[in-house]
Amino acid sequence: DIQLTQSPFFLSASVGDRVTITCRASQGISRYLAWYQQKPGKAPKLLIYDASTLQSGVPSRFSGSGSGTEFTLTISSLQPEDFATYYCQQLNSYPSFGGGTKVEIK
Amino acid sequence: QVQLVESGGGLVKPGGSLRLSCAASGFTFSDYYMSWIRQAPGKGLEWVSYISSSDNTVYYVDSVKGRFTISRDNAKNSLYLQMNSLRAEDTAVYYCARAQIAAGLDYWGQGTLVTVSS
Image (cartoon, rainbow over all chains, first blue to last red; front, side, top):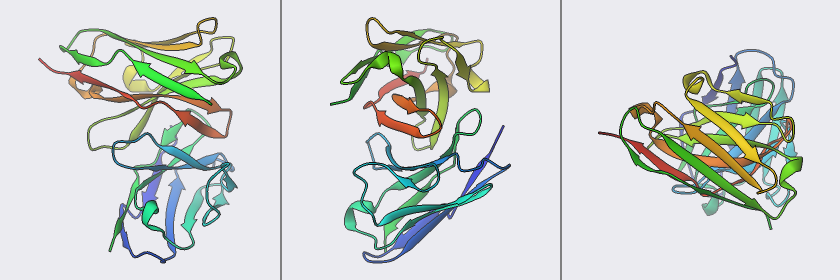
């Protein structure tokens, strides 16, 4: 099974900050990676798929990069509505999620 | 618009059974893979199972193999998860989601809570 390790586990940041979250796969998954945002009490929302393709309707301040085993999600200028937990998911084999990164207000 | 509405959650004793349903609307249900994902209280997301669009190929996470069964009725635009031999560790919010092949889960339901406790 492919394991995904996200870092950091917790991130404290201010509005306007540039934020980067990393997701590492235990083996190569090409570009079969998606990113989700989840707010408390709500279902996750797809942000990015195919490692870097922005889902329709997602603001352009979100971007993804990477291939193989290392991937990043970047928020170029953090907005108040971006404070949430972010998950990566690999789609190369049986799907699995990373452990999540909680982004909180500094 | 695309809608997914789960139902069937509740409180069940260890060893008991529950059947979750997910009613889909706003898209051609038979064209899409569908998935169940769960989230234990205060924990992260765990993919549980998925089913192909038409040939009913299914996959399960190891922890539910032999206990859970995913199925679908394309005529009724519905997805199901039959959960047997439930354990305390199955306690979670269960989400159904529409799957784009190799492109993620683009629509999710609101979730239904399953609590396994004596």
